[in-house]
Amino acid sequence: MALTAATATPIMARMLTTTASATPSRISSIRFSPKPFLSSKLTFSSFSSNKAQAQRRFTTSRISATISTGDKLPESTLSYFDSAGELQTTTVSELTKGKKAILFAVPGAFTPTCSQKHLPGFVEKSSELKSKGVDTIACISVNDAFVMKAWKEDLKIGDEVLLLSDGNGDFTRALGVELDLSDKPIGLGVRSRRYALLADDGVVKVLNLEEGGAFENSSAEDMLKAL
Image (tube, rainbow, N blue to C red; front, side, top):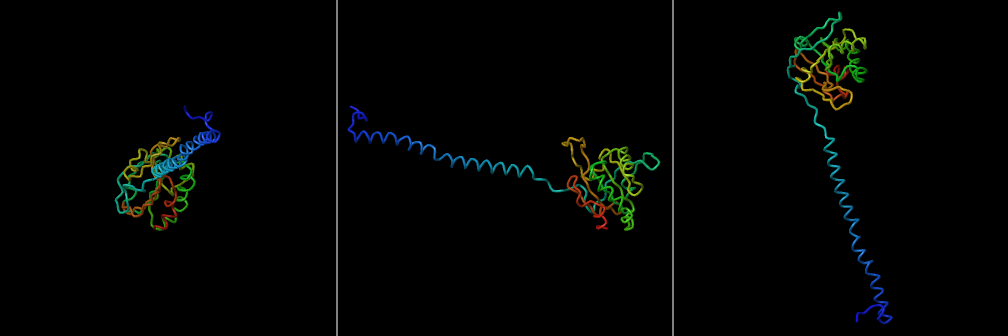
């Protein structure tokens, strides 16, 4: 006959009852105690993986361009409207041959930093720059000549700075300074990165190239310091 709590002596019955009640607790302890430790390991691993992915996602490439100091500027044709309202074209060689020329580029006409700081700065400092031997100061943008004309009129600019249209971006691509803004919701497409360069007889002597549209080292003041 099997020994049960019902058939056992009182002392044995108490032992059987105690053993039966203790067993689930012991099994429960063995079953669940590792879980917090395993969960912690998985959470740490997942965090480490996500952190590494985030670091890779926000890594940016080094600022670079096809053109560099000591290089000859590539030939290209640019357009503008003269004071009589006639459409004209000029070439890079016409702007720079036998001259000291400052060419600076903006991502877009009428954009805030370009309109409030970059272009007005060169207009304001044009006399100082020319007193230091600069013959030509020109602003270049991947905009059509009509937009550049309207921008010039809006800012009431005279002949201090020549506003040039690189409408198809040919000169910008030749320099290797394209700025792709196609992912932005305002329709800018591919433009030029912001920069300022000093060329002597067509050879680049100073090149201050910005990261995208940043405005940190391409101002008129920066070029004055470089002269």
